[in-house]
Length: 155
Image (tube, rainbow, N blue to C red):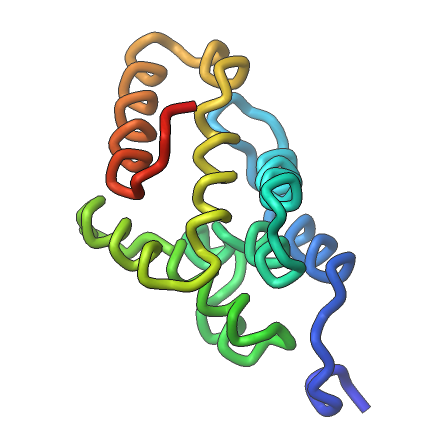
């Protein structure tokens, strides 16, 4: 019997392994393996008291947006509906406004803590310091705007 036949939910370790494999060829803006960012977000969710469902969503939060995994795969995946809902809430859509994106996050139970951890990882001063000044300035503004739209305090 396969995992899908038994309707078992993936363990946190299985979700991490899947996310690492799905993003294996990807690097972040400073050239580090993308899985480092995913680990930082998952650890940030854990440190903020997030549930296993939220930690799973942290590992997968960019998978659909980055085409590492398909939305079709996600719908049929052995994950809880809450985890799936959070991943979909955090998946930016083409031409979507930041306001619309923020409203979807705020309307999805459990998504805000994952996005807060994502923003903390993305806006890490040590990470931003490795970027050229125009990129650093643009991303700093982008992350601050999203924090404001989500009602999160600075830093």
